[in-house]
Image (cartoon, rainbow, N blue to C red):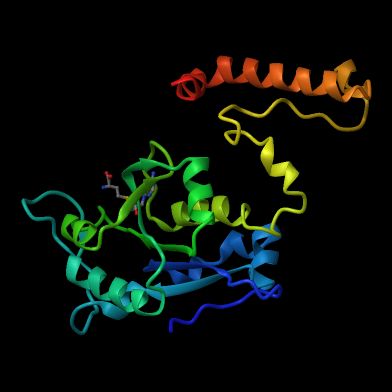
Length: 241
Ligand code: SAM
């Protein structure tokens, strides 16, 4: 039986594994605030695997020059497969994700689907990226955090993990606060206000102080539509289709 850590509540922990050349970067920001408290409470767990442990030769090489020439280095398929197979032996149920600018864009729906499963195993790339053959042979799902290039997959892995972990039961205090967030409804969130009632000559919209919950809900729904149409019309098109 694979080891499956349990949380304080007795529920099996949502299990994250990261394969990286820089395990010391973790948990990093995931060790603080909501994610950090949830990690300490055992709501989720984090296993780190040093890819270099599976490197070749005296220097534990993990990369080599690109076939066909060109700049930079490519992570070797045989080294990565050995690291993945080793990690998989103790976590066979986790879907395997390679953080990659060539991947499908990360969405709230993806985070929600992964959070509903047993966890995730993430390969963080470095150099120019990873030999295509290991992506195919180990059936990795490629996920991108946006249309820009980071120097490594560790920060993208943290982005994905943070988006998933905050959706786990018991991590965010009021589950209600997740429901109205940007993207959950297919739209951006409405604007937010808090005290003081007036600040630098700017007042909180009157309706929010009216105590009329129906009117407040209508105002928020309209603001959501307005912000989404102005800033992200692509989201409205997606919802309509
Ligand atoms: N040569 C690659 C390209 O042009 O697509 C970029 C490689 S990047 C310097 C090194 C690693 O960072 C990648 O293997 C990937 O793991 C990670 N990475 C960089 N940008 C990313 C993004 N937008 N989303 C997810 N991972 C990313």
